[in-house]
Amino acid sequence: MCSFMAAAIALTIFLLLTPGKKPQGTDNTAADPAVQAEPETFTSDYWVNNAEFTSAGDVPVIHSYVPWGSPRRPGEVREIRYLTIHETDNRSSGADSEAHNSLLLNDTTNSTGWHYTVDDHVIYHNLPDNEIGWNAGDNRTKHGGNINGIGIEMCVNLTNDYEQTVRNTAALAAKLLVTYDLGVEDVRLHQDFMDKVCPHRLISEGRVEQFYQMIRDDYTELLRQQVKDTIKRGTQHE
Image (cartoon, rainbow, N blue to C red; front, side, top):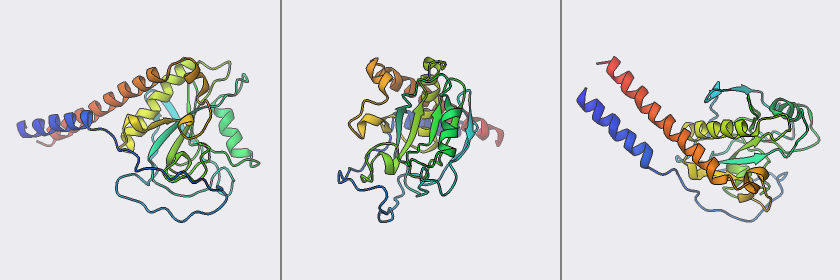
C-alpha cells in the first residue's frame, strides 16, 4: 500500500508540473485546401484517434457528425496538436449550438467546418477530433490550425448566457487536453493562425488570460481526479 501511494503521489507531481508538448515548428507556405497534400507522417508524440465522451464538466456532449461526402468534412486523419478557440460572431437570437450543428449538417455550399460548438447548456461534437477541419484560415500550413487543431466555436447569440458559455468551453478544453495528453499552452486562439480578431468578444473585453486560468483550474482538477481514481483502483486490488 505504501509503495502504491508513493507512486501515486509521484504521478500527481509529474502530471501537475510537466508542461505539455510544444509545436515542432511551422512551414508558413500556404496551399489551396482543395489540393491533396502528401500523407502526413505521424509521430508517437500526438494522438491520431478520436475519443468520445458524454459530458465535459456538467455539460452534455452530443455527437452529431457532419456526414461523409460533405465539403465541410474532408475526412483526412491527422495528429492532434492544438485546440483552436473561436466565436461564431452570430448574434441572432436562435443561433445556439444546435442551430450551428444543423448548419454544418445541411449546408453543403461551404467548406468551413469545426469540431465542437458550445453554448450555455450543451456542446455539439460536429467533426471527429482526429480529422482535419477548415476553420483556422491557414490553409495547409504544416503543423497549423487547420491541419492539427481541434476547432471549438463559442456561441454569442443574444439569448445565450455568454458567461456560462465561456465556462463550458473551458471545461471542454480541459477535458480535451487531458484526453489527448496536451498542455494548456496548446490552447490557441483563432487569431494565432491568421490575421483576424477571433474570438472577438473574449479578446476585445480583455478576458483571454481569465479564460486560460479557467482552463488551468479545470485541467488541474481533472488530473487530480485521475490520480484519486488510480489510488482507489489500486486499494481495491490489495
